[in-house]
Image (cartoon, rainbow, N blue to C red; front, side, top):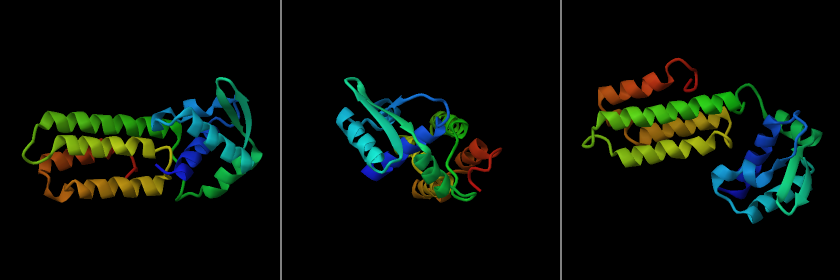
Length: 172
C-alpha cells in the first residue's frame, strides 16, 4: 500500500473519532497494515506538516488528534456518491466477507473454485474499507468477483454471493 493511502487511512481513522477529546497512537490506528513504528511516525509527521492534526511524540509513539483543518479536508472530500464507510458499515461488511468465506468453504467445490485464491481476494478487501470511499470499494469488489470468474461459477456459488449482500445496497 502506498504512503499516501496509509496517510489517508490514518486521517480517516482520526476523523471517525473527531469529537471524543482523545489523542490516538498512530501506530495503533494503523496496526492492520503491519507498518513499523518509524513509518507510523513519518505518516504522523506528514499529517502534522499538512496541518491536519495536532501531534504529541512520546517514548511510546506519536499521538494524534485531528484538528479543524483536517476535519474540513475530510468533509470537503466527501459527497453523497463519494462517502466513506462508517465504523458500523466496516464491521458489517467485514462480517459479511467472513461469512462468504465460510459458506464458500462449506461448498467444497474444489474443481470449480480454487478456495485459497478466493479467500485471498476476499481478505484483500477488508483493509480497503478504511482507505477507499464507498464507490471505489464497490468497484474493486465487483472487479474481484469478475476476476475470480463469477461468470463461470456454479449457480449455487452465485446465489451465495448475492445472498451475502442482498439486504444492503453495498453493490448498488
